Image 1 (spheres, one colour):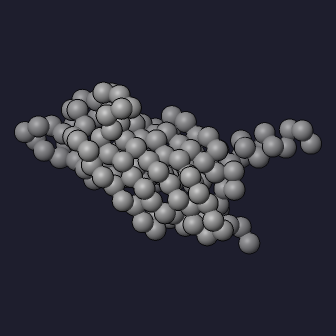
Image 2 (cartoon, one colour):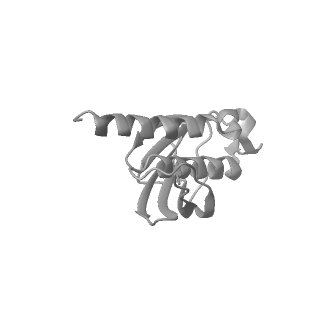
Image 3 (cartoon, helix red, strand yellow):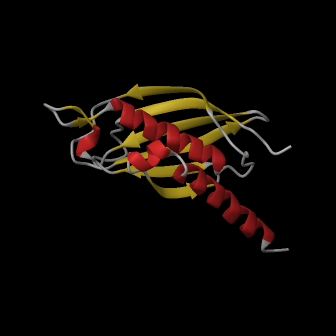
Amino acid sequence: MADQPKRDEELRLRVARDFIDALPHARTLGMQVAHLGEGEARIVMPWNEKLIGDPQTRVIHGGAVSALMDTCSGAAVMAHPEAPVSTATIDLRIDYMRAAVPGQVITARATVFHMTRTVAFIRATAHDEEGLDLPVATATGAFTVERAS
């Protein structure tokens, strides 16, 4: 039985990864899972010319950053030790701090900081390669927690 917690964690992480891989927009935007832990996720999105929102500055469209942060947040919920069967965004507030540097990978990090029986609350940040102390955006949100019956 000593291996059961490890198997449970592996299953939870596989479910979370499968959840992300099944999202068409995540594939289209080139999102890649970099880390899944207990209620936390890190997803990277490579810079892609197709994602440019402003042709003059070549800055990635805010909608792509928003989709990255939403997906990463959902992944964190799915990777929580009390992993739900599924989740959906109830509310996601994103504050854009600055434009991402053209040509740089954007990384989103999300953490579940509180979970009730029916709602998970998250905090997330998005950074380009300029570093963690200079976020592109921050977010807070609430996600549904659908449990097996």
